[in-house]
Image (cartoon, rainbow, N blue to C red; front, side):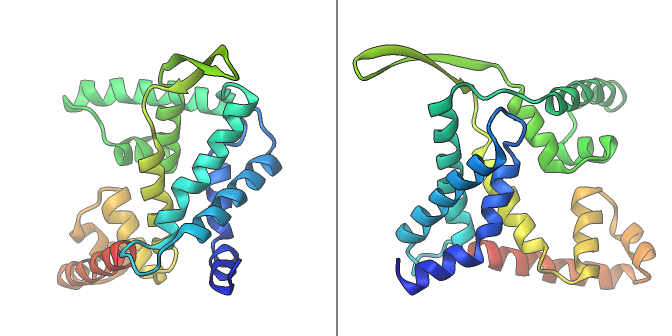
Length: 219
C-alpha cells in the first residue's frame, strides 16, 4: 500500500463505521461487519483515481457496502431486526395518515419529522422491509437459492453518507440552516426568526452553503 492509499484509509475509517452501523442487528456481529467494511475501504483506496472529479468518500462507500453484502451472502439471508420492523409499521401508519390529510405521498424528510427519527433511518427501514426476490443460481455446480432485496438502497445510502460527512464540517449556524430548511421543511422566514437573522441574510447564506456542499460533493 502506498503512502497516499494509507492516508485515504486512515482518514476515512469513519465511513466504515457509518456503513457497518446500517447493518447492525441483522444477524452478524458488528466486528465482522466492520472488518468486511475495512476490506472494502482498502480496495477502494487501491482503485481510486484522484484525478477524477469524484470525492473519495463517494467512491469508497459502494466498495465498503459491497464487502459487507458479500459477508451476508456467504453467511445467509439478511435478517431484519425488530427495531426496523417496528419502525416500518410506524412508517406505514404515518404514510396512511399523511395521505388522508394531505392527499399525497409523504417525502422521507416529512416522515422523519413526523416520527422524530433521522431521514436515513426512514430510508433504511423502508428498504429493509421490501419484499425479497428468491434467485436460483449455481455455486460449485449445485443450485442454491439466495434472497436479495427487490430494490437497492445503496445509491441513497451513498448520498446520505457523503452528505452527512460534508454537513458535519459546516459551522454550527450553517448546519442549523440546512437542518431546518431541508430536513424540517421550515421557511426562510422561520429560520431567520429562529436564528435571529433577516430573511435576506438567511437566503444569501443558504445559497453559499448549498454551493459549498455541491463543491465538496462533486468537485
